Length: 280
Image 1 (cartoon, rainbow, N blue to C red):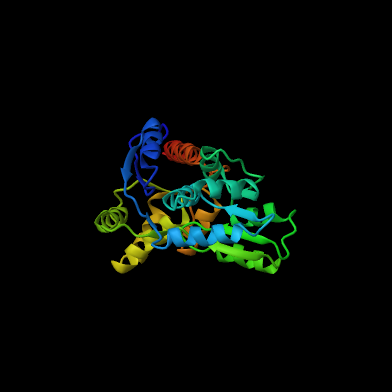
Image 2 (cartoon, rainbow, N blue to C red; image 1 turned 60 degrees about the vertical axis):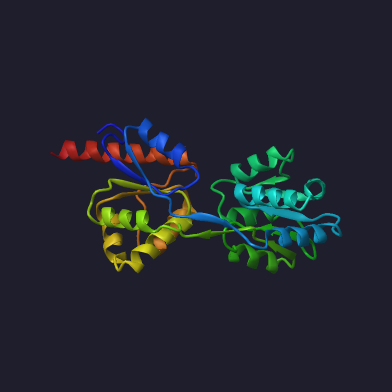
């Protein structure tokens, strides 16, 4: 077997489906796109940003931890709606910006900003905590711009260092409004009509199993992913969420990038096919 030739690959990433689908096709696979997550803006986004600006106004050297590109974009957009974007950018220029990965870095660059501290791959919470190690955080204002849910381990680490924490969460991860496509995906995996599935975030794994549980098919899904469908996770955080659901991914690339994941998936399937042929 050459790469993903003839393999139907389920993709659960909503915003990047086009890019992932192109990568799968490039390796000969057939992409099957089913978004598992929607990002819903918080109804109180403007109030949260106004409160944040009020805090930053009185801080000489705050630390701002940016976990996702979507969070940076939501922050910028909410400030613009308030008519206070120039003020936000000025406050951020004075802060120590801790950036987790390439997406928040790219979003910062669009605003003419650069991170002060980068987080090492594979960008796990442990690596964020490690990046903060050189900083004296006691009684220092640390703004934590969450992703679609609160990062409790990171909060606990900051509290343990006696930081003054300002939490900001501008969007939430929700299930798609129409669950039909996800329900169909669960059934097709169980019926062995999906050759591989690629997860690019932990919440995708949780949502897939949540839907399967509501259908009464969680155990059947778990069995199919263990025994029949090749499972790829983009990085260790995503892999841990799958393992918590009882599935150990077959593929986790060394670098937590979508391109590396698809290349590793193609190699795994190609090697498995070659091994099967040699035994035959």
